[in-house]
Length: 287
Image 1 (cartoon, rainbow, N blue to C red):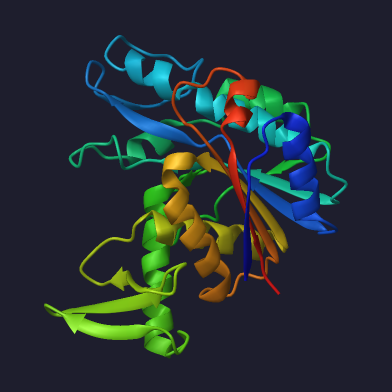
Image 2: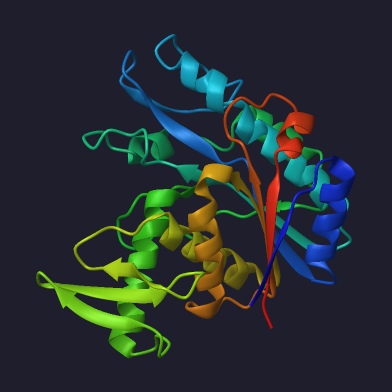
């Protein structure tokens, strides 16, 4: 893997970087429009933290801080995709459905009550419907609740845990992996970006953001055949996104040859220009 870092400061630089990263890929997937799921105590329900969606005074501060990021990145991703000559283009939306959801609140209530995309998403996507398709998760197994049209992070973490357990059982992890037993739990350690061993799986714990990123990239690229993946994500998640990108290919076997991660501030941004001015990009190239 070859990893390079870039700091585009205007749209033109970001566009050129994206075009170069995607190259001559015949299929590409973008992840954008990522938003927080919030619990509104005054109404006793979960709501998407997206500007334009109904709010109450209880959660208004969160909307002011974080509600612009989803719309700005969604519109920016579709704008960038319009610059690409790639024949097949898909866009997907990941949802942080754990950080601000109390443990005693059933997150599935949000998904079962959600009908399609929020209006601001669907209106923008409609402008590109002739060239960009929305990628939704596969139907869940057994009686699990579907998170469509979104990719819920908790669902991705659970899928990652199951995939890791199967790889361990089949003995298909690389020689660099180390399997241990701790307090009755099976623990798997894998090299991080610096080569140091880091816990990647434990039967007694849920996966973290690294696992969900790896699972997301693997699922998206495997289902679409995409050899290029571009993610617009909150900069605070950089460590997990970088490590998850590497593991999607080197551990799970995703066939993508390029992953471009575009990190942006998730709070206090209200325009495309201010968003891009703080962009920190990293490009993973795989042989």
